[in-house]
Length: 346
Image (cartoon, rainbow, N blue to C red; front, top):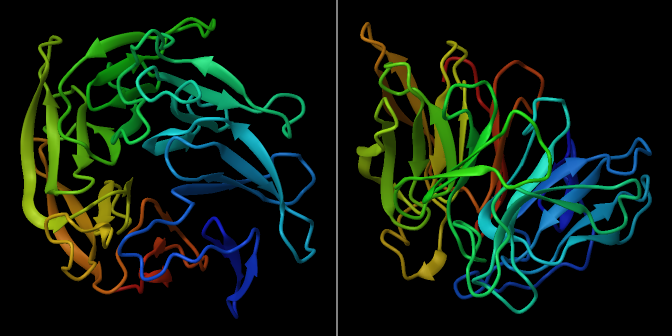
């Protein structure tokens, strides 16, 4: 596999860099940001070549870049939507049909408080603006849906009510996926799911049969879970790690060690706001938190260091990069672009 970071792709195994657009000059990263908060690959025009979806700076238009079929030079840019809000957009198989959709907030041009949570899909012509499908009520008149400001933090997908359908959640509650998708807004369940966080995962931590929510602090210290009280009685916060690592602006919930239990992978986004955040100058660790389940069904997490000199970014990837059956970590941030290969027995 090759590696892409939103501005260039790196050709394996020599890692020759191929820009897909004009490269930005971001200095030392202390006071600035790149123009790629998230990116994903997908063959959007069905020509057999992988294209790249790029979410730029929050609140600005997002685009996809068309693969020139092996030719060098800048890739053709197509606008997906005029406004990409929330710093943790999701590109996932929301309906379990093998097709991923883009989930994010959207605001009218020039606004930041009239957002709508929605999912977006390409039409028959993917080079045209994508189609917007409501998840929340449509924002307007100075009112917006939760999690839809340009700098909103915290977004996730999972089955919170056990009906087999994937719901969409933010820190202020969750939208229940209906049995029939008819274009109408989804039912919103208000809930306190914590402070500004990154990716949010649905998992029954305490083994009581009711799904809970795992999340990590985007800019401060803290890794926690919110227990869903059975009977629709709300959520209760439980801290897993108070001060293990700060600025955990992205996370994955995957089975790192192959024991059948999903583990939490996260780390430090170094200089997420320059030196303004707690622990901003601490070395950029990446951790995997090994899950183990007791006889009572309760899951505990034990931290293990993956790396101490790279950290995560606003996004990172976990995948079996070299085909050896072990999950590796790929990350790009103010420290550089890294492939960290898992070695068996380590």
